[in-house]
Amino acid sequence: QVQLVESGGGLVQAGASLRLSCSASGLTFRIYVMGWFRQAPGKEREFVAAISGSGGRTSYADSVKGRFTIYRDNAKNTVYLQMNSLKVEDTAVYYCAADRRGALSVVRNAYDYWGQGTQVTVSS
Image (cartoon, rainbow, N blue to C red; front, side, top):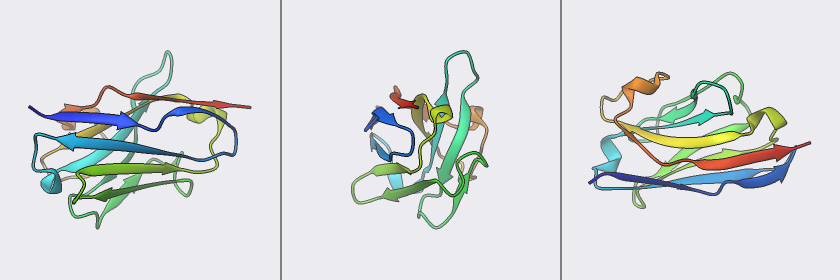
């Protein structure tokens, strides 16, 4: 059974940093594209970042480019999202997701497995 478990969320002030982690089990982690999405209250779930199985390719939403970094450790079956210079508008539940097809998709329906989410709240 595939499980994705996020951690690392919390309440921080604007300008601070957080690192989210997503630990995966029950799948051959290294062959999956891993993505991070987020959903703010009353809004659609949106793409944040994705990384290829080897870690050699990444993709970011324009809203986080230059502030967030996605990376992975295949030996630990874990993907990370380093979030710097956080803004109030980054407040959301952050989800990690796994896609076996290999494209760095920004579309949520492309992803096969999802975690339960972790809350990130940025105060002004």
